[in-house]
Image 1 (cartoon, chains in turn blue, orange):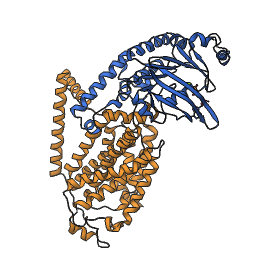
Image 2 (tube, helix red, strand yellow; image 1 turned 120 degrees about the horizontal axis):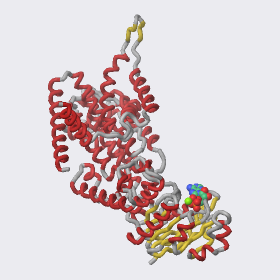
Image 3 (cartoon, protein in one colour; image 1 turned 90 degrees about the vertical axis):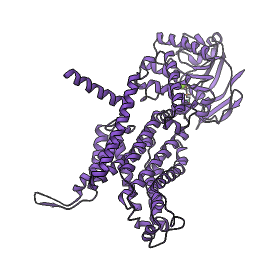
Image 4 (cartoon, helix red, strand yellow; image 1 turned 180 degrees about the vertical axis):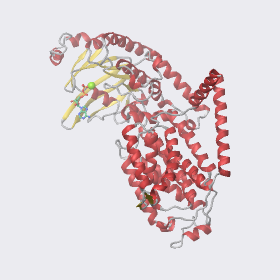
Length: 257
Length: 353
Ligand SMILES: Nc1ncnc2c1ncn2[C@@H]1O[C@H](COP(=O)(O)OP(=O)(O)O)[C@@H](O)[C@H]1O
Ligand SMILES: [Mg+2]
């Protein structure tokens, strides 16, 4: 079943066409890689899917429902979550609060029952806390739960962002360069972790990544963007031998192409 | 863990008992001057904590508190004043019906003041909080000025610049501090709840908050409307305490006072707003001396009105320059903290003996 369909998306910023005619039909359970040089338009694709930007042309369907002009929080509630390339944690709040905030969209108690501390609310609060603790255990951050999020090392912040995204209960997870700033050992662990959560939560994932090793290692299908255009699509084998891709990456990552 | 919970309960009961005892003794035996300062403290606490919800916890900069206070003060006065008192006050243009004939108990006038303020808060806040960007400061500043001008001109409702005089003093320590404690309790619960975390996430990073499913508009309006509600009640209490209100006493200077309390106490610290709110009320009275004519070493200095605000402004600048986070930062008091302090001193005492 198709979970996401990006139907010929084009977006212009003034004179610049950041993404043109982007097409992606994503099957449930896929792990797709989105690669391309800096400024190719990868993050912009994420921003369109999550409703941060509205495409100039084209439509987006999530499980056959049109979400093109929905607000960001509604799209998240429908089941699309993301992480950010330039980490955007709630830096002054604690690690566990970061995750608990992402559980807020499921809260049923009214604001008054929360402010008056009614039992029905307190029960929900407990439930949220337990879930957040469970997620933190999964990314091995449970010992840091009361630390200020902004004080964590870089790699841990990236993991916290993933835990926070998972707390929204997504069906589709968009990871924007999750391995950026990680050392090779951390990167290896991250790859295993991505596969693990995909399995566990039955996720469909789109992965933007600069580290070709990561993408080639875990993605069955890869899309390559260059100057906003999709210049290649296929499995890792095909992508590695695609002359267009080699040209786009020439010099930079030639050893992988 | 069980024992601790029981300790907290005891601590809460003891604190509540002590507070009630203090209010009881104070209300019965303190002189009018001290009572006035204590009442003002309670009111400043209500105003500071409620503005902190908007400016400190949600990160939306409102400059509209005086406007909501004016609405609360007038709305309640129109309800609790007796018809005879209204007739005496409105001698230029008579008060319009039905305000001219109704009179309700103080408590209902307070609730109405809060609800009306909250309703107006919604109408003012909703349009600009829908937009991205910091329009709130400008819009609320304008709103406050519009209220002032409007109230100066609606002769047959507000009595215009003459204001309302001889208001009955219903405000006593039970009202001012009772409501102050309720405000602290309510807003503390709110900011520590899931809704409060959502408000703080907006302050931290709007883009990330929205991406995590936080409805920005709903939560910003929520915080603004709750803040306006308590500002309205604070204004109502102030009117009945001072016994006289006029539109110009709810100018920008009034909002500025509350802003000082919030910033000096710490944006995002309820404890900070409480401490500084109380100190502010005391200092406002103590520093009254600097505005009266002085004679220093034979040098005659005439009274300079506004001198107190000058001092407070300098204080504000010092705090902003040297304690960016305010006196309390985002630190709070909690029952745990108090329990910890008490048990520690107990232990130290035992060890000492
Ligand atoms: N809000 C915006 N306004 C103007 N230009 C933008 C905006 N967002 C992205 N762009 C431009 O779109 C292009 C693609 O950016 P981006 O999607 O961030 O690239 P990538 O993630 O592939 O490195 C860049 O040239 C960038 O400058
Ligand atoms: Mg990018």
